[in-house]
Length: 105
Image 1 (cartoon, rainbow, N blue to C red):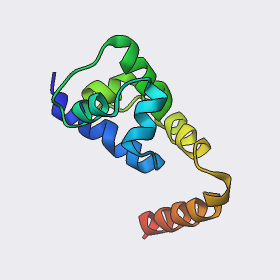
Image 2 (cartoon, rainbow, N blue to C red; image 1 turned 90 degrees about the horizontal axis):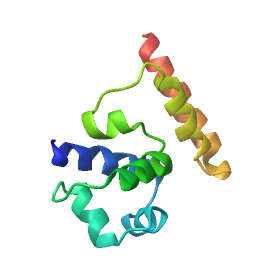
Image 3 (spheres, rainbow, N blue to C red; image 1 turned 60 degrees about the vertical axis):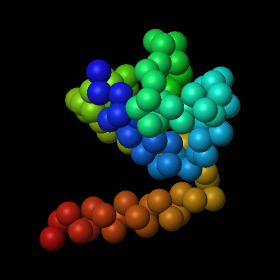
Image 4 (tube, rainbow, N blue to C red; image 1 turned 30 degrees about the horizontal axis):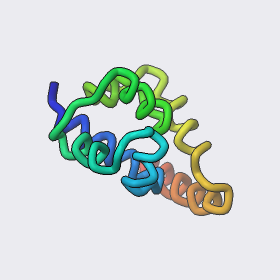
């Protein structure tokens, strides 16, 4: 298992969602130090912790462990958008529209 890349995927999603490491640790019911060790790839995790990470971050366990995206990646995007604070949604909409326009060129 490539724990370093597992940790990078977890950290990337945590930062994308705007969680501090301490806030994520609290949601996962683990210590901030253990959360840090996971993100740095220094330690693995139990199946229950993996499942909590998947739930809290809105990522599939396959993606967390292997970096593979499920066929239904749109559902993951929608779940990520749902976690966006309501007051930030106009900014997110602007970002998405700009990104989509850039892909059309």
